[in-house]
Image (tube, rainbow, N blue to C red; front, side, top):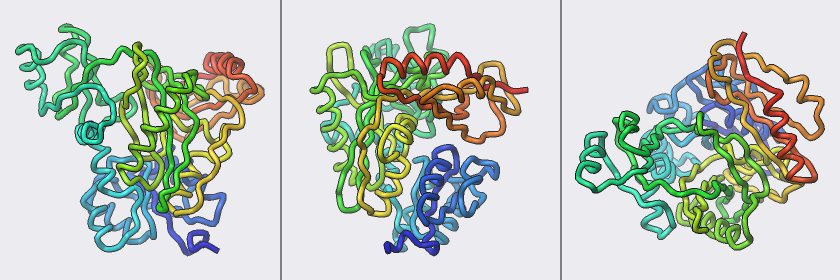
Amino acid sequence: MSKYLSSDFKLGIICGGQLGKMLGLAAANWDVSTHVLDANEDCPAAKVCNEYTKGHHTDFDAVYAFGKKVDLITFEIEHVNIEALKKLKSEGKAIFPDPELLETIKDKGLQKLFYQKHNIPTSNFELYENADQILAAIKEGKLQYPFVQKSRTDGYDGKGVAVIQSEKDLELILPVPSVVEDAVAIEKEIAISIARNQKGEMALYPLVEMEFSETANLVEFLSCPANVSESIEKEAISLAIKIAEALDLVGILAVELFLDKQGNLSVNECAPRTHNSGHHTIENNYTSQFEQQIRAVLNLPLGSTKMKSPAVMINLLGEDNYSGPVYYEGFEEIMQMEGVHPHIYGKSTTKPFRKMGHITIVDDSLENAIEKAREVKEKIKVISR
């Protein structure tokens, strides 16, 4: 029996949000003991892991002490104290993905420079230290509208992003070190996830297509398979493989891409972890992204990514104007619908546009799944009472 499939083996997961919870649930199918580090005692993963440790993922001492008591470290977020991880690695601790990979990806500036260095297509960009530099570049004619500003670090779920269409949007500029990139005339936003283990074996998931909410800047509908040509699919696969190999990835990587109106494909950004664009894989594929991450970091054979049926995923977001103890209105109604699989993350309080869960809808027909997903979205509301 593999040493990993033993109660004595401790898999450390840094951060215990919904991704950590679903990772822990996947590990629970095997005899893998999961240990979670998170600053919030009420975090979703604390309810399913074998042992919870209170501590912040950016605190050197907390990360280092946690790492010392587990056998292998993996993540649900890339914004971790890298120095603590490097020290643990120097002492022989197994950490996947590697701290240097995390260091590159968690800084959107370094991430863009990585694409540039490896000739990976991405939108034109410049790096700025503050808002004054951006305003000066506009005044000097070096920066043209429209453009997108992204905070180099700590951005997530639409936060840390400013879309500047014209002079009237200048008040939205973020006062932080950032990447400023050309606004792409987008035809479709698509994503592909790739897993790679220590032996270099790889597995790719079918391409997905995403529709974003303009209000929340979060995925509103995700459909699988994506409605793109075979040539675009092959190009996306090729780019994912190239990035994974260049990063020497061990784990799972979500690659978000833009297909522009001229038919060109470019990389938007990557996440070296399980991702919102892969939640549907729990019901939709033979191996979920969460089980696949565990397989990859433990250097086990990767699971089949074959699709069982077409699927649509919708995020359950807190309704606008509601904050407080959460209530899921319409939950019983959607539970009566065939092929509808709700996942409630276990966050006790809601607030506007907070991710509270997701729902996957599977059907023999993608068109039917999409129609049913729109019906589900109308029936269920995340409110407070």
